[in-house]
Image 1: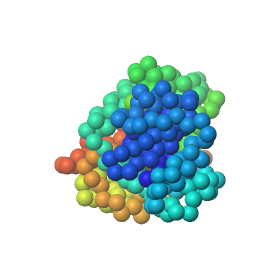
Image 2 (image 1 turned 180 degrees about the vertical axis):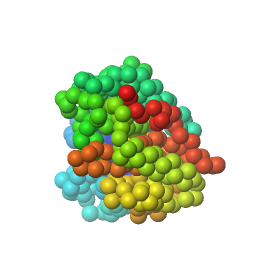
Image 3 (image 1 turned 135 degrees about the vertical axis):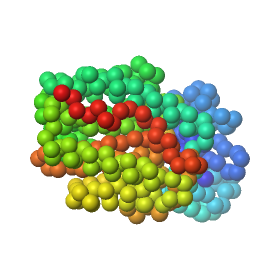
Length: 338
């Protein structure tokens, strides 16, 4: 198997640079890097042969496969560009049969071992702590961008390497945009405010979303929040070993459908979390993968009303042999900031 996806290269070798190619065959592996990463690779790769390449990684890998007489090689079709694959095939020659195996790495990464779980647990603890710390700063007159900057600053102070994604801070009608980028808009009394944040720690991510309200919410807003909260609770309770992922998604949608809000739920209920912020398994309508102990997933139903705003509540949780464990412990009940 030829690995070109940095996430899979990290998983199999420990190397976290942005440029490298690895070849894995049974218990043996080799990692090719350019001179920028030689020292880093030798420090990080766990018992892996590291080779410095100055002639282009893809070209070198293809020639190496041809010299070694490899005949059947898997490649990551979901990551390798068409241009790189054509070059690889040309350099390797006609004796190599290429097999598209882009899902293998993601499938193996989906179930976390104890060391990975503990790392994600710590990343979630940082994220939850930072959310609680920044809550007093969510006030009218503060810019969305300033809240986002404060979150990312505090995560790094707590030991995070980086945010797991661009922190989302959206307010007012902008909360109807599920992936709104923080803007220079000032928070105002009467605004819904969505905070979506996550930290990277030792290469592993966390994910947390909370929705707040500045002032005293009217009945319609309270009902929206209560509906999403109930949908999330039902989906979390349904996330157990042996349950198909689509069943968890269905749990959330049924609760929203009872309140005639399901048509305003415009994304899947969740996703796996690990080296990447979006991993397998997807918690979606058509996903038949059965949950297993060791899966780390998010549960994040949301309702988005154009011109009004949106509500999303998200936690990262671990599927355990007996059920599930919520890893992001930040409060969900203190959502009204008067």
